Length: 384
Image (cartoon, rainbow, N blue to C red; front, side, top):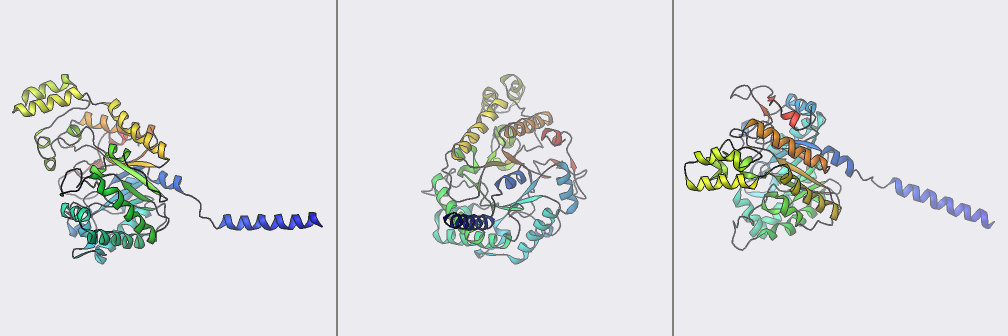
């Protein structure tokens, strides 16, 4: 009788246990990370500065199919705050533009790609408000709660949320009394707000100082589940942003900067520089001898941080402003960075598809049809 009672009890425990396990949603973190392995940024579609006339049709299924067929697994979709929210109330979504963005997400997913939706604001006043004004912070938290509530309709492997692109008001001392430490606790509050609307979707978080890789290694990871950490990589900035007028002096004055840089290959550029300050700057770049080992040293620190804290990390921006960069140096840089992050099994997204850093180009100045991949780019990125 005791034996029979024991078997009944154990059978009951077994089936209760099985029922409990069946109700548990399995962890799909590895699947999500595999979707975020090889990405490309679609810049200037829904940014603050983008032309609203293009919202409905800048990219179509032909573009997404081209991206998918090249070997990319996801698209990072920058969205400006002035595009997706009411100008008079940050917490209220712009229904018309939300419809355009939602259709874009549907089309991207239909092509077999996943989507990372990132709040990509170009507004210094907005970030200043977020850093200094409690009411603006509350509105921003509600904004993200509302946005997450809308997009949680998609599978957790199809859509992920990225909180804010490159916060930097503290690093640049753009607001009195605000340093880099303002961002981490506020980001945690935003995570909590997203979690209220979308408990299981993955959230991408980053550090202050333009999502700098070193600042990420100083960040204490959050306790919330399903957080992926990101960093951006544009070192050496002298090379990656040569000729970029928005970067200011001296970057807007330089071109044909080689990678890797050495005193020897920089000597002709130093000699031709029109001012002594520019000569010193170019000379300094050469003496740094920035190369593949330099890239590896930086990425390895991120990898070590990720391992120490047992949290996933990706790099969802890297690239070179191409109009003024030597073509061979550009391809070499792309290849060396891609090889390095792959070595550490860190997913990546290149900046960008068809703009100034673009991996693809249109035959003429008029954007028509599907652009052509630049020669050598797919090889440098390991996609063919």
